[in-house]
Length: 97
Image 1: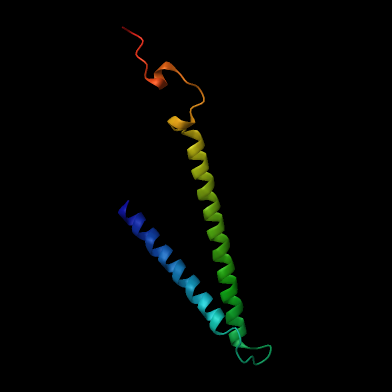
Image 2: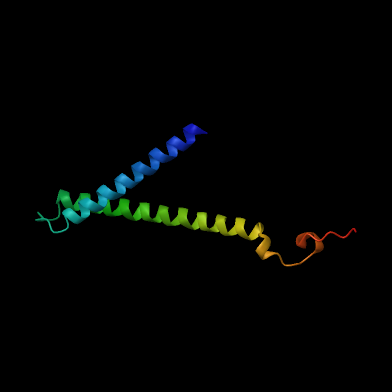
């Protein structure tokens, strides 16, 4: 279990670093001196943009799945405040005297 948690943390940090450096490169080279169709900086910017878009879609999908799972768990396990029926057991009434 410890190995899975460590692997998850390392991969999350790696994805954040890639996203940050890709975004910083796009910002830094947005107004570079372009050399025409074969500009290597423009090609790298296009790759960085696709990385950022791909990671954004992955993050959106993960957040949607997490929200769906959270909503499903909360709706399947109602708390005391969300009970639909009031019973003597839920009110903790002692019926014997």
